[in-house]
Length: 179
Image (cartoon, rainbow, N blue to C red; front, side, top):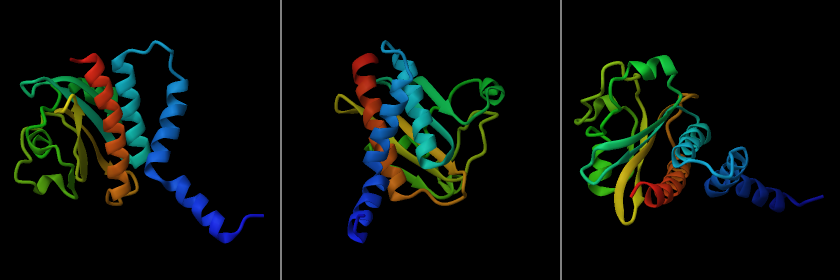
């Protein structure tokens, strides 16, 4: 039988964001073929971030050197809604700051942000936003973000850490396969 101190340490280890990401990622990657496309791997990362943060929606945008979206992956948006979007969001609103300074964006109400404009028609309604930059070869080459936790709670520091760790994996894929 373990002591209360050991159980407490075990519980903290189980809740550690990095451990949660790595274990979940390892489990998901085992279900994919050995030779997986970069697009499939990025979609796994989008799905994983949404699941681990409890978000309603998740997205990952890969941008080119001129800051144009050249790859866009989503989770939580029904296909019928996704098909109604004529173009992916270009991220020039609140997420645009990610490309300017690379720092995380954490908004409790994106609608109140001064730069909250330019959403494509039929874009899903969202309130809370947590986004982090995707770095590849020492430059920002996209954004990884989630919106609106299913439980209605605010995104946490642990959620930001989860998203950052997943964005690091995305950055490795972008650096290897998109340059």
